[in-house]
Image (cartoon, rainbow, N blue to C red; front, side):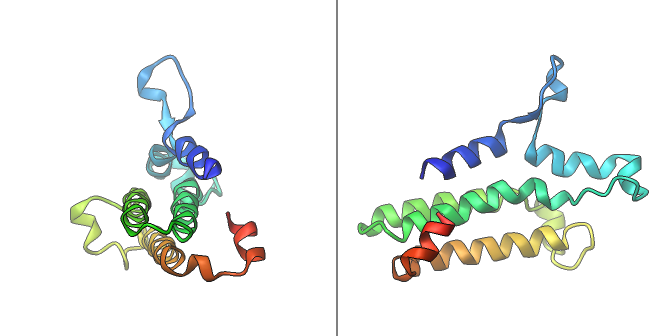
Length: 139
C-alpha cells in the first residue's frame, strides 16, 4: 500500500523543478509537453511518452491488488473507484477521447490505460485468488 501511495504521489509531484512556477512539471505534464519539442518531433530524442504514465498505471494496478484483499465490499468499491479515477488521468480530454484509440498520437496511451484499467478490475475481484508468489511480485 505504501508503495502505491508513494508511486502515485511521485506521478503528481514535480519531476522538473525550477524557481519559475511554470517550469515545475509533473509526469503527466512531461508526457504532454515533450511532444511539442522539435527534437522529439524530428525523432532525434528517442523517448517514449507513455513511460511518463507508467507510475500511475502501476499505482492503479497496485490499488486493484490491495482491493482484492479487502473483505468489506464498500471499501473494496471505494478503493476500486480511486484506482479507476487515477488510471484515467493520462487519457486525452473529451474531444480527442472519442477517437483516441485509433489516432497515432494517443493510441498507445489509450490501450495501455485500458489494459491497466482491466487489470485493476480483475485484481479487485479475483486478486485474493492469485498465488502468493504472484502477489508478492506484483504488490
